[in-house]
Amino acid sequence: MKKTIRFSAAAAAAAALTMAATVSAGGYNPGQDHGELGVADVYNRTITITPETRWVNVSQGEDVKFVDTATGQSFVWNFDTTNPMFDLATVAPPGALGGQHVTAYVQVNNNDES
Image (cartoon, rainbow, N blue to C red; front, side, top):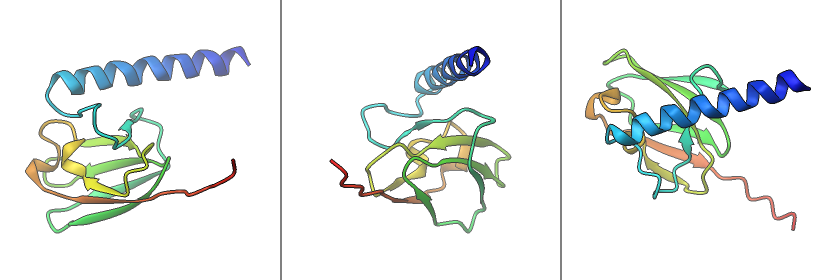
């Protein structure tokens, strides 16, 4: 149990540092509801972005690693959002996607269990 808590705390700290670096570099705007930067080695699946990619389908709450073949860069995004679609370039780290606009279509979970 203690190992799990320590790992979770370390992962959260790493994510916060990565997010701070991205925000200061002019990338992600936390005022937008698009989710948040994920932990580099923690993701559900990988999506490769090519110059021909125009859209991707993801699910709410999913952690996806995006690999850009044009720039060689990658990043993980946590789709903790209720926003059904947005331009992935608005959350990609500077230089990733090379200015390419890719629409992220988010399958929002509408669980009305109140």
